Image (cartoon, rainbow, N blue to C red; front, side):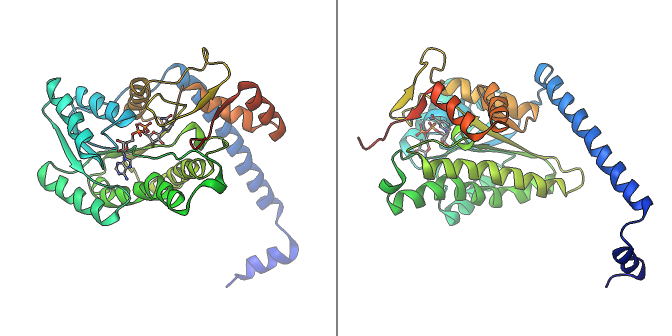
Length: 317
Ligand SMILES: NC(=O)c1ccc[n+]([C@@H]2O[C@H](COP(=O)([O-])OP(=O)(O)OC[C@H]3O[C@@H](n4cnc5c(N)ncnc54)[C@H](O)[C@@H]3O)[C@@H](O)[C@H]2O)c1
């Protein structure tokens, strides 16, 4: 029910005092914008200090191969307990054995299909009993069929979303309650440069990686509603990585824009996680370049894309 005052305001328009207050509030927002932009520039040169992950229990999905395997090895070397999940039991066991061989005994292998919600909850419970509460999640497992939208089967499109997006939701729903209870935890989700800008032959994949970026931003809004919440979020946007996932890379300036190694992607991502950085592109500059190009006319962005000549050929041809 509007009060008498509100009714009066609606009829007579806002008072001079109210207009001044809105003006001052807006001016305050502009000051904050300037301050936070300067802070971001300073942070580029002087990043926040790293927090140790020694003693943390880190879940890495897709740990049997590629970037996930590197995440598992590097977190173990930093003193964390590693919980390796993969659908490929043999590869996952190999990762754990390699970690053990390097002298880190605290690594455990579990077979889990991240797209199966029931199995995710069951496996999280098993990990809790065997090892303890997971305190860092690395949502890494992903698939990337690469052909035109009309050539994608229904099964492929559903699998892309089930693994690359919904799997993250099931894991977060299963683990975040214990993080909130302890008021301690970190969720790292792997998007992609394909989650920053669209690419041909990758329509469902790009949509899934934009979704990762979207849900992480929305989840941050929810967590910010909790006073002093210490559950942190980091989203990772790697450029093409030499793991075999990108089957037909097309790179015009191949020397300057070489494919990344899984090692450098995991190292940059872990560094960002330990410093509490919210968005980490690999290379780091790409996040800022994308933001800059997005401010330009769309046709200008297309011209830049064509100049760079980075794309993926169809895996069907
Ligand atoms: N390779 C790239 O160029 C690149 C670039 C940007 C982002 N990414 C992203 O990085 C992540 C890892 O990519 P990668 O290149 O290391 O891939 P990869 O194919 O080398 O490894 C992926 C691992 O995930 C596992 N996996 C697949 N489906 C699973 C499921 N349902 N449940 C559990 N495990 C499953 C696979 O068995 C495999 O071991 C993916 O999310 C990918 O989209 C990759």
